[in-house]
Picture 1 (cartoon, helix red, strand yellow):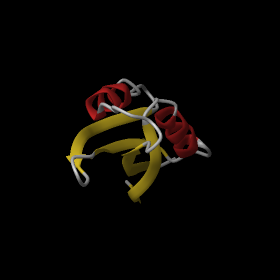
Picture 2: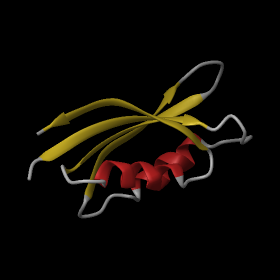
Picture 3: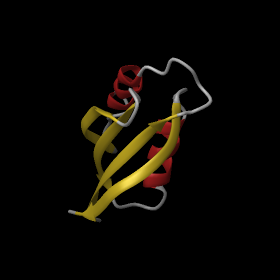
Length: 90
């Protein structure tokens, strides 16, 4: 089984006020385990003072693993839309 590298953009939830992107970044870093190798998490400017979190993770290329990781990230309050910026096999 191969490995897949994914880069995500976590946009803030428009319905939640006072979102701390650093809090979201810390939460995502803590998702690293033997299945998900979270290699980088960065807070980047979006627009008008808003920020988003960019996540780069490497995982096994198994059924349902990307969906599971996306569900784990979206479980954090303040995470809105999750966009896949890139994916590739290693």
